[in-house]
Length: 328
Image 1 (cartoon, rainbow, N blue to C red):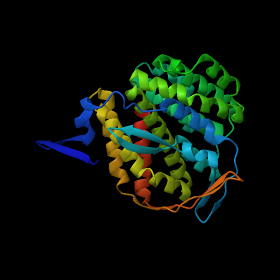
Image 2 (image 1 turned 90 degrees about the vertical axis):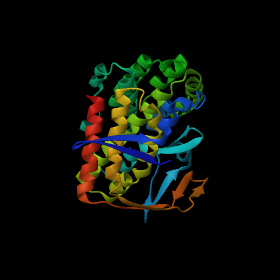
Image 3 (image 1 turned 90 degrees about the horizontal axis):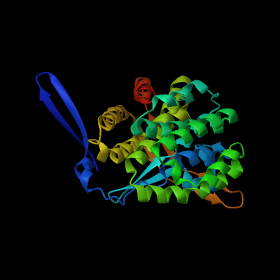
Image 4 (image 1 turned 60 degrees about the vertical axis):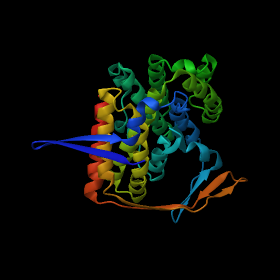
């Protein structure tokens, strides 16, 4: 599907209505096409992928534990079309591997949670806090991990999605917050509960917002670090978001007319997509090699990004602006 851009000209004022083709099918979306595993994906990606592993890079090749293969992306279905988005964890993983120092100021302060009173604000900030949780866990900031988990729990309760998990699962997650192996076990077991809940309660809009918040926060952190460090790996990771951003806009598009919050968010993301068009991005796929004995996957695919310093800073500034509208 492609974007449809309609321009209405009134005198000297140009009103840009950024519409997606799927908006036309808004009222035809089946209730059965729920976004699956949304909240638990954000939460689980923060922990499952951050279990201690060894990572090597050699000539753009990267070793990743086998267990990360299925959780490094989220698969979404809309109108019988499948979309993939990168895990919010991936950006933080790249930042840590680039020897970028931990920076707490990049995160959304837990105290901001009192500002979020609508379902829109609560859902999108669950995604933002979920990405922050992953960043904290990667940098072994255990006390803050507990604080951010508490905030996510509070927001999920207010959204009514906290009931998707059985009480004993929540208790076990909380008790193992600093034990990554045990946490992996309990979070993995909770997938089915969330999947069932989202399917039966028609919370598609909430799920989309959680994923959107997670993506925005991960790209905000990534772009900030890329601008400051000028690290080539981080710049490449940022450039790789060009197509996932298109996917995200298309997933959001059925909700364009649901509220002013949704339409403003989609408009902002389309404006961001314009800036990403200034990036020259190429990707060459090569089949990965799996070593089951060492539990590693050798990823051989390569990407190349050409971006000017102007576009890099412009993208970072636009992402920061979008994020500030969400968290403040």
